[in-house]
Image (cartoon, rainbow, N blue to C red):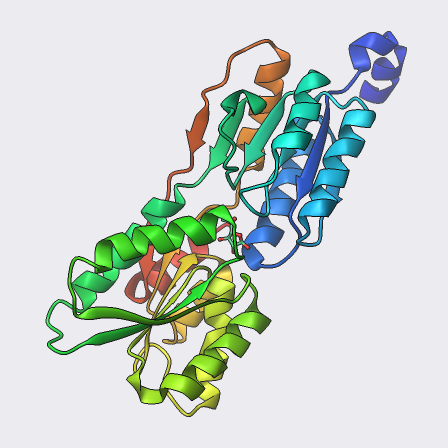
Length: 307
Ligand code: GYE
């Protein structure tokens, strides 16, 4: 009956808001949950979603945004794979009077009139949380604490900021030494591969692994086990996201802690799209609230996790 009624309404009243969304790809459990959240929330909100997967390539995101402009969508949203190189396409969207929402990751353009709002986590703070947990964990350690770091995608906001926040905290005590730092591109496969190289080069010298996301930590755990070492015991492991895979690793005693980064941005994105269309002004920055989960609480928290 509702459908019959809807089709009887004049065409104008039925016109759905159209949102073009350019996603980075499917590199991690986080990203998969993020895409699902956006698709489901668009459905729930009655927003027509044009979803485009860039397979980790900035050029594909730029193409997608240009095609959204050509299709005259109502709003464009995207999660920029890297921070730089967006000025031209953002100016094209502005010239076409299509509002742009940044989700998850930031851009480093000076002209902040090129987007209406940026919603997502404070990645520097996540890095600090990881650092503070380590400083506390190692407060009684006397000798050097040798850390290896698996960075996220080169040039991406979370890789830059998580490194920065973590360093800011651990550099306060000279016993902490980051002896190797390399990108694992936020994937399990790369995390494993780079950890193998770290182990080959540094072996038992490594006391701590700091991974910019859970997937790389999970890949690295495999490498550590294959090298005959015990993850979370011989090497303390810290990562970020707190996806289900990380909780499983913590419950298995293989990961020490995961800092939360919520991918569930769909609901607030759809709300922002509706607010924009209703002529409301959005706050320039919408920060996601999040916690930290050490392995001791993993089993208790696991049933409550939504991603
Ligand atoms: O931490 C990682 C993903 O941009 C916050 O991207 C996101 C990061 C997330 O691939 O797992």
